[in-house]
Length: 269
Image 1 (tube, helix red, strand yellow):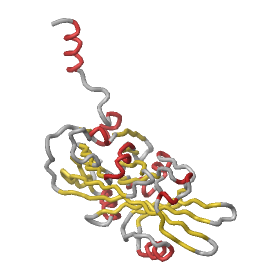
Image 2 (cartoon, one colour; image 1 turned 135 degrees about the vertical axis):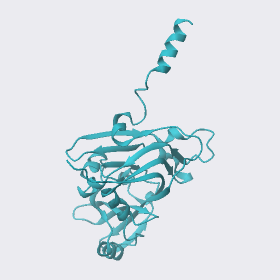
Image 3 (cartoon, one colour; image 1 turned 90 degrees about the vertical axis):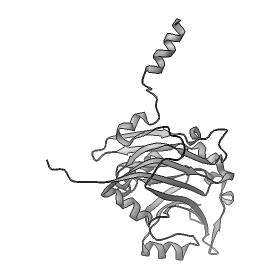
């Protein structure tokens, strides 16, 4: 065996220090390899959508518009967040700092109850459902205001209301073994945006790492808009997942394969 072969053999034996999510693996899990679809006990389906509103003050008019009808400075990326129960109760303070936006102004985020549903749907021709997580961004044109542009970013769960799903992390840990990330065929550029996993403890210790969805799409993949990420990931109330939405991509889908659910139990001290 020559020197080059010895070096290669030694490198193969060494632990990979640059493994995906290595920086927060001890906190939230790791990526791994599997052949075919993994076994799972349940699936959770999440849908992230955007809707844009143009409101004219005088004469009064409110219309749903497409992203292409937005002013050029507003055709930028906007963030979305899933999981992160503790950060949700903190008004997404950490997530908003992690995903800054230009020109758009972050207004409000919360679970849509009957009161907010009546308010938003009465004032805007938007399609929302009670129990969804809704984030609102706004841009005012001129001072005094003549036009208002609004963006509603909503997260919907097909299994139960998203509010129920999110609150379950107060008492349970859900362990995933795959994350399927799907975008429309016309919006594959959305997959350029990395998924950012973050973990913030009760006392402020914070870790973050990224996964590029394109890593799990090859030239042999039939549907180039689907990324199957094999991830062994326990989700608790401290875990946050977010990314940016391309302004022209108005819907993305996540299917979470749940390997097991672990109830949290108080331990005596």
